[in-house]
Image 1: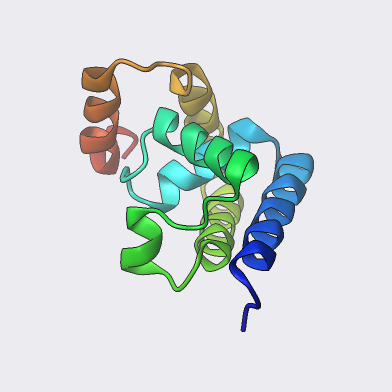
Image 2: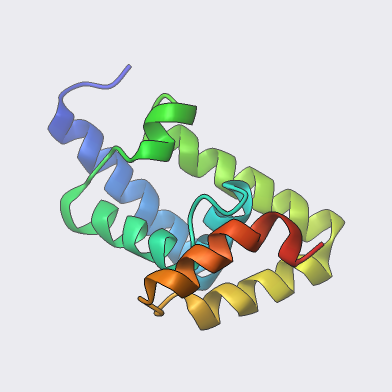
Length: 123
């Protein structure tokens, strides 16, 4: 059980820093896109990471609908992507490369296309 909202924000920020230090931003963006089945576009995932680091924002629509908290969401994303790396390493590499190329794109139409097409684009 979490303590205060401030403690929860600090815990989530620390978890995000640890993930970025151990996995890197490109890996984490790809993990968030993959495990959300395209709910997050690469740019949305990058912005979610940024919002967690800047203000400890511990909630988002996906978090509230599918998980108890951001920590559980991030744990799920990491487990899913580590499984993909183990079982289909080429897909994981392509996804990291593709998400890295698209994570700075702010064009809404392109991000929407990536999100909507994600479930089938790398099949």
